[in-house]
Each structure stands twice: as structure tokens, then as C-alpha cells.
Amino acid sequence: MRLSMIVFAVLAAVLQSGQETRDDLALRLLRPAAKRLDDGIAAFIKGAKPAEAFKPWQQESVPIDRSTALRGDMKSNGVTAAANCGIELEIQLWSAGKGVYTITLFAHVTPEEASIIAVTGHRFDSTAKAAVPVAKCAGEAEAFKDAAEYFVRRMKEGKPDALLFAEPERIVKKVPAQFREPFAAGMKQSKAGVADLCTAVSAVKFDEMRIQLGEQYYTSLGADGSTKDGFIRGKLKLSDAGDVVYRLNRFETE
Image (cartoon, rainbow, N blue to C red; front, side):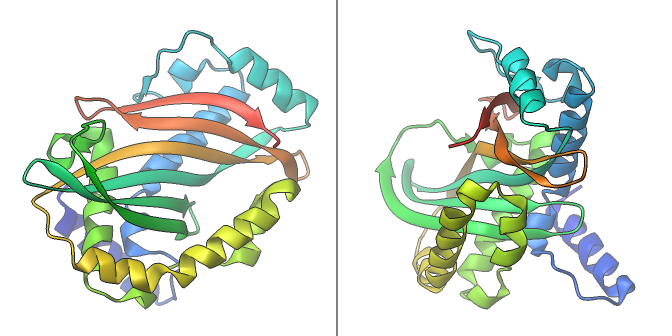
């Protein structure tokens, strides 16, 4: 499904609902990926191996399988469920074969909300090609491509108020207590700088877009639904062929 068709479907759903949405329309396109993460962690908690839990995503090959240690840390901390909290997406703008600007987006995407936790950007001068051309992104990776293209388009419109940031008081409830203060401070700083960021992106001339994925965090939940004192951390990436690759990493408490 092409981007224009996806956007039309999103707008139609919003209009039909007759209700105000808390969704940033670009980030809403990441909802299938967020569901894959939620379904995968639920299967993992029930005992599935990561390679099975997160199909059809590829599992990153690592020297040490940390899934056993992760299960132990979750159990000792009373974690019985989890939900996606944040997904990192790096967007690189290239011109004449060189990188000229990079945007790092940390998105909060759930069945109820799609919003920005933080977004930053800066100029860079590089020919390193770790990021993947959006033209290569198909299948499971297409949602990330569509979200990146739409998000940059909206930034270049120079309307920062149209970019929906998460409400800090809502997000901190999903964050372990020891991380709440830096999370809230980072969100405030990012939102304060988004107008300047949109202005900078609007001035960038580019002929190619590349993307790469990054850190991913789950809110850890107890049997009573309370947030536990640690994130379940994962790592998303795109392969050179444009496939989504994932691995569960560790239980992070500091």
C-alpha cells in the first residue's frame, strides 16, 4: 500500500470516528510495527523463543544469547507483562552521494496513541552507508519508510505545532521511577527546540533519504498493571537488503 493510500485511510478513520485523535499522522503509520513488538514480547513472556516470538522479523545474530538472563531479571523484578514505550528512528537526508542532515526521532506508539517523545537533528558530513535507502524498504520495513517520508514532509512545511508531542505527565507513568525526571526534561527540551529544527530541515536540499532503526524500550508491568522499576530494552535495525532485524537485549534499571 502506497503512502497516499495509507494517509487517506488514516484520515478517513479519523473523520468517521467523530472524535479528536491523539495521533501524529506520520507516527500512526508505525502502529503495525508497534503491534508486532507487543505481540512478540507477550509471546516471549509466555515462553516462546525470540526467533519465533517476533516472526517474520529476522533475529540479529549475537555472540551471547541474553534471553535466559532477561527472563530471570524480569521474574525477579515481578514483571508479568510489557508494552512498547518507545521506538527510535534515524532519518538521514543525502545530497549528491553525501549525507547532509540527520534527524533522530523517538516515537511513542501504542494502540491508543502515536506521538513524539523526542526529536533532534543536526548537519553531518558523511559517506558512511550504515543507513538504508528508503527505496530498499519493502514488506515489514515499509511502515518505517512511509513514516519517515511523511514526517520529513511535515517538518519541511514549517508547522511545528502540527507535530504531536506526548504529554509528559502521561509518559512518565509508563517510565520506571528512576528514569522519569530525565525523560520529562528531555521531552521539554526537545519540544522547545522543534520550531528551530523545522526551520533547519526546511532549508535542507536533498535527493535521497536513508533510514536506520535503533533502541526500543518496553514498559515493564506487574500483575496489578503497575509500572515496574526497569525497562525491557530491545534493538531494531534494518539490514542492507531492507529487512527488519530485531533482538531483545536486557532489563535496564540504570
